[in-house]
Length: 250
Image (cartoon, rainbow, N blue to C red; front, side, top):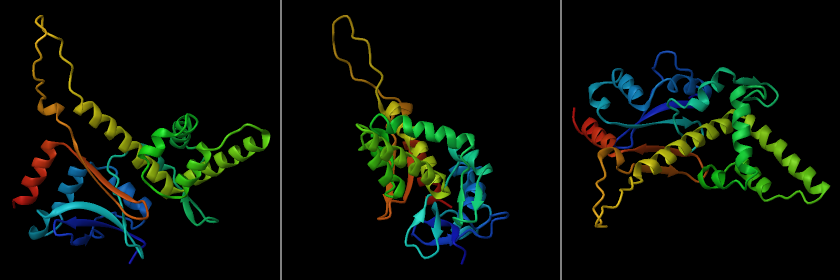
C-alpha cells in the first residue's frame, strides 16, 4: 500500500480505493493535483462513470487515507490558494519532504495574509484554524509574545522565522489553503444567513421578514479527529436535496 491513497466513502461507511483512476499518483501532492481541478460534484460524476452500478449511487464523500494512521485527510476541490502553489512544489532531499519555495508568489501572499492577522492578535487564526499541529503551537506563542526589550524582540523574530519555515512544508501549507477556503465559506454563510433589513412603513408596523431560497442559512458538518485533521463540507438546503435524491435513487 502506498503512503497516501484516494478513497470514496459509501453511505454505509465502506471505503473504496480509487487507485484505478488514470493518471493518479499516490502521493499527497499527486492526489491534490488530480482532484483540485474539479469541484466536488464534477469529481463525483467522473468517479461514478468508472465504478459499478451498485456502488455509484452510494458514494457519500471522498477522503485521503494515510498508511499507518487512523485518520484521513480532506480532499481538495478547486482550492484557488492551492492551485498555483502546486506548480511550484519542490522535494527537499535533506528534509525528505515536499516544500514550497520562499520566492513562490502564493507563499509570499499567504505569509502576508497570516502575519497581518497575527500582528493584530491572531483572533481570526485562533478561531478558525482547526488543526492542532506545530504551526498552531508556534503561532499561539508568537501572538502571546511581546517586544518590550531587545531580548523579547529577538525571541519574537525567531518565532516568526520558525513559523515561516513551518509554513513551507507542503502538508502544513495545504492546511492553510483549506483554512483560507473555510474562511471564505464562513463569510459567505454569514452573508447568506443575514436577513436584508426592511425600511419601516409610515405607520411603523412591524412586518415579517421573508427569507428567500437564496437567503436561507447554509448547513455545515465538521468532523475532527484527535490529531486535528479535518474533513469539512458546507451545504445549502438545495445541495442537501440534491444529495438525498442522488444517493437515495438509482
